[in-house]
Length: 457
Image (tube, rainbow, N blue to C red; front, side, top):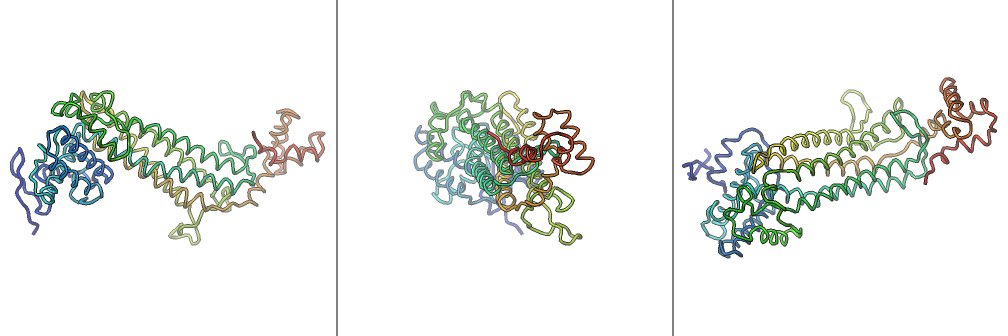
């Protein structure tokens, strides 16, 4: 039989598991919110602990909390920040929209740890939550956790993908292939340009994500319930940002308007949009790889992706492009998360958005998925694919669209006739052009040289 203890809050007594570090309010949330197995991400809990530590330090500096009490709270926060006590944060993501249950969960766990480690009896609301409310704590934690994950996880993963693209571009720099538009043959190009374009697309996505950092570094902490700062000492917000900046190395500042920062989640929505745009870039790369790998005999067959696992339970020897497929599914999830975040951001009624936990969860999940997808695409697809040069060359020389190079010499209409004739007879363009123009074969060989046609400024 599981042992319980009796805890009390403003609503009365509650039975709480004997070994739980949390108290009555968390237990009520556990019983009330049984929607899913989803819990707030570790990154969010860690950021929340950092916020509590900086708040305690600020409260001590402003004389509303003793230095001994603040130090005990900070030490407890540092333990949580390191990833300890994860099982003591059991509240469902689908909870009260302000995230009050998660905030109180943290307050109660910290109070228990302070009691255990320092022998001090601190109240979850009166001491741990001093000069704070869920309404400024949770939005601040959304910004801080998203910022940390952006810098430590997502941007490094995208840089790694971009570097892989650059290295692969060098490897394939001598290969001329058929370009494609509308999935149809187009003029020749270097495979190097194709791969470098992927890297360029990723770099642009990185730059857009990096531009979000300045807005994420604005924290509404100190606005308390609605943005007016009631129950926080004068100067709390700026001092808090200074202390948290020192703990995180970020240059954190109060927002231009606490009221706006707590009433809306525009920054989170904008970041989600940039994550989705970056995911779209990964989708483009993954789809290109799938098409280029298709076959090996009845598809394009330009490349062979690394063989990672058997592709079929019934067709022996079949190998599928599993990494691009997994990346595409991750992108689908990110698109869904963005739609959810957009819906949530639209629920900023008067002085508070009441969809904060779901915004936090989806935003952090999208970043994690995108980072992992980028790493997988880089290391398990792009880095190791081989090129079927012979097949590429055979398709290239038979491409009737090579005739485009003759437009300035013979005009579009005659060039079109040559292309049609080449299609119809399944012959090389140069052979048909010899018959239909007065240009020498030697000159045509120069004009129709795929390597020359693939050159650019």
